[in-house]
Length: 361
Ligand code: SF4
Image (cartoon, rainbow, N blue to C red; front, side):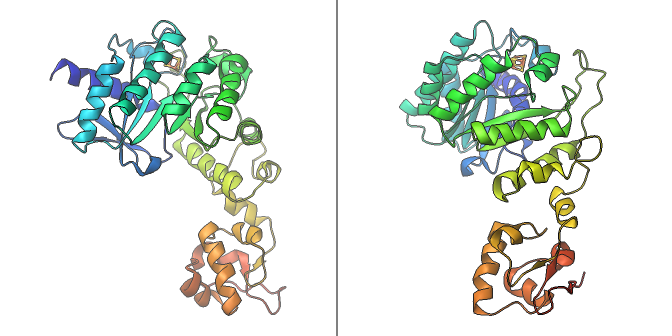
């Protein structure tokens, strides 16, 4: 294996902890290095996720990069050339570029931006996601926003106190929230963030408050959730791993906030007595506490509260019921594609609204 291939293999392996899609996985291409496959990001197909620097001057207690102490690094020219080669061969369709903070933030941030600029100058017009480092300057954020399709800074934790438990060197308000506000101004609707669930011992009530603040203040297009996984040799090695289902439930809860018009206060009712999400679809939990919905009369907002009905099905129901009311479960399944199993307990079909007509399960 050439030195360049070694670098690519090791720096893509180190970069896999940053998320850029809820369902991402890792795929090995036969002759190529580790490529993170991302079906959703901008429709770009295979996403190359890689670090510019494999070492970091910071010492965040949950982080894999701090352990690796990789002295390997790409120069911007090297990485741009390597990526363009893979892209031209059709092996990758997008780039997610991050880095350990080797030395000072400004010089590494310049290199990240420079890599993006080289790629654009050389004709790369595909998907480009650049990571903004904590403490980056406004000028670098501006340049990254100009050159990239998407930029992101990781919150990692829900508050300054929580971050202090796991990454004391970062100033949550200055290095992260202030930068995130700049990012929101430079790239409205084109930025994301990530929270590591369970690393700092936060409750789901704290996560919910954090998300409510995010959507009110800076409106990220997505928040990614990674379940904390204890790495041997780190200060958090003895902390229990966060179950993966917690991340899955947070993706469901987050989509209720973003796409279904559920308010943070409504979502708070789903939490258990210990302020955690139960391991159950939060939409079902919410619907269990509500009255059945008349499918022929309900508003779009109310239809969206029914498990099994998403935005597309709700719109279809609104359209089709103008032609002819739905007569029952089979009619609803045949015309609007609503699965009886999911919607069964939560719908009525008119006439006597007080009588709930259960779909055949
Ligand atoms: S700053 Fe980032 S790369 Fe460096 S140790 Fe912390 S989380 Fe890891």
